[in-house]
Amino acid sequence: MLDPMEAVPAFPAITWSDLEAIYEDLAITKVEREAVQHLLTITRLMSPHLSPLDLMREIICIAFVLTPASDQSPNEGKSRRWPDPKPSG
Image (tube, rainbow, N blue to C red; front, side, top):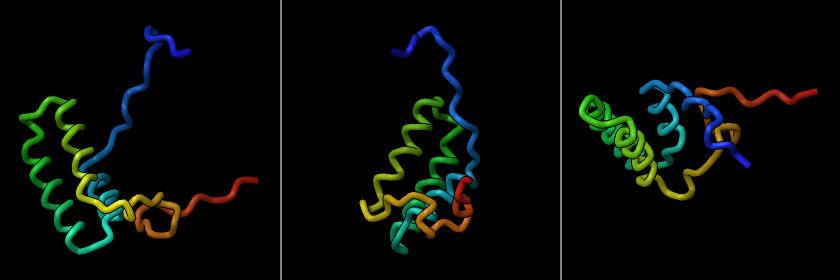
């Protein structure tokens, strides 16, 4: 069982460029790509006025514009940013 007093690691640092690359990889259609790009731009502009929790909520909600077919892991050959994982052993 998880000890609530145990230190929990911080959320990994991620840049706006990383977010753009992730959502660009996930967007399948031109409409999705444009919508995600627009929402990320607005969220970035609003970010100084949002609490960290509200900012994270906005970033997560952007994913709702994507279709279920967009739910692919980067190693399915679609990602242009992350290389395919190398087999171990």
